[in-house]
Image 1 (cartoon, rainbow, N blue to C red):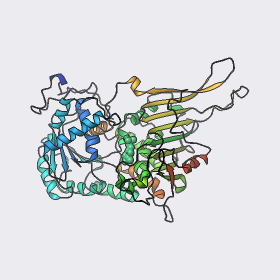
Image 2: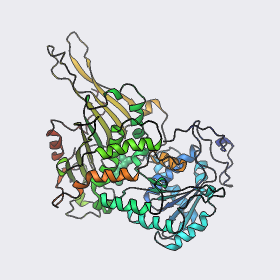
Image 3: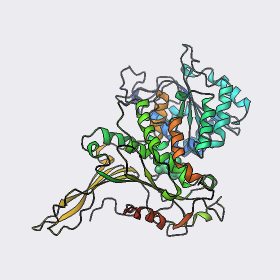
Image 4: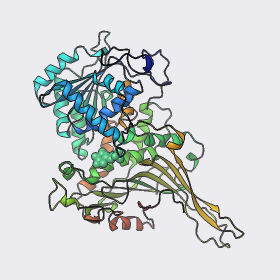
Length: 538
Ligand code: BG6
């Protein structure tokens, strides 16, 4: 989320002048970076988990997009570490094939139309595969040799691996001296660690992981990813709130009735049965992605756009979340329905599994601005629609001016921030309907990104990778926020008196379990239907 304009001369001539990348990889053959953006400093990106899905699906498309935009330094290197002997050309070819598939797949977040061969070659030239076990001393000794020539002494270690490897990799890096900064010729040179979610499975494990990592690296070296923060539409929440005079005055308990935060998916567990069985929808989505959205909606305006200023304000919100009790939460699991088989019939899922694939929660933020305003959160797999959005519902008008007219009830004003797959906002409000009689009709005004801006090649990881290279931590999670978030849900994960949360069935392709409706009905509220016509038009 860097805001620094490009004040230095770029060493990146325009793409048209770039020599063919097939010939040689010089530091000067990247496309020009867009105006107002500077290329990231040179570095080596070491990806642990080079053969994994994350690398193929998200990191490579993001690196490719950054290369297309001229935001990578010509001296950059990318070393992919994975167990299993293979040659660099084979790894490159594999990544290229996947990239071509994703580019052509309209449903994927990365659809580039036709791949730009020159940009791909530019990336490919910088890729090097290194075979190595994640827990073996040899791997790190070998890596150390390779990193001796890292440009500027700068290295980013990206842990795109299962969470069981987080601790051993960090420990090996630390013991091998690879996290020591200032290794460049001029005494500069950064060492950064990027850690994926799940960051722990509860408060105790997150604390333990933080303590372990921080015994080898400083907090400023640690970049904990929540990929939702890489989405333009999520970053835009702050823009909508703080770059417009209209919203902020009503953005408080006096005017806001409730907020609904939804991350509904139509897909099931998609071959991730093993992971999901241990994780479940609640851990997978609530204290991380959904809390991050809540934080963006609820945080106070920071004094500046500095990483620490923004993160401090978000941290205050996580700290103010009233700890959830099992009463505030509903778990569900999809059963056979219009959208397909039940969760228990999915591969790698136990036939009697009680893992939740749906979670809804009623959350309160205990501070001056939000006291008494419910935030309703829900997420689930195999629901009626794919929809990630935040709906802010305003309170009714204070006086029923139209009470003597045929107008009986007014529909509430709702501002919806659409994160995915629609990108934009909509606003529900009331107008007079045409005709001689005073009648009020509910209408919706919408803004779609695509109507105003050229399609963006954003898979969500570009900003995160780029910011990490620049050393901008605004969009990454700090140790304290991770812990306060887990703390707020600890009583749900470990209910007092033992036992587990009940898990209610819902039909695959439905709106979720009836008990989630009851959770809101208690407050006289209802979920916004997932299957509605999004434009709300006749
Ligand atoms: C991931 C979860 O973090 O986020 C997945 O592990 C989920 O289960 C995904 O599907 C949702 O992300 P997005 O960007 O597709 O909405």
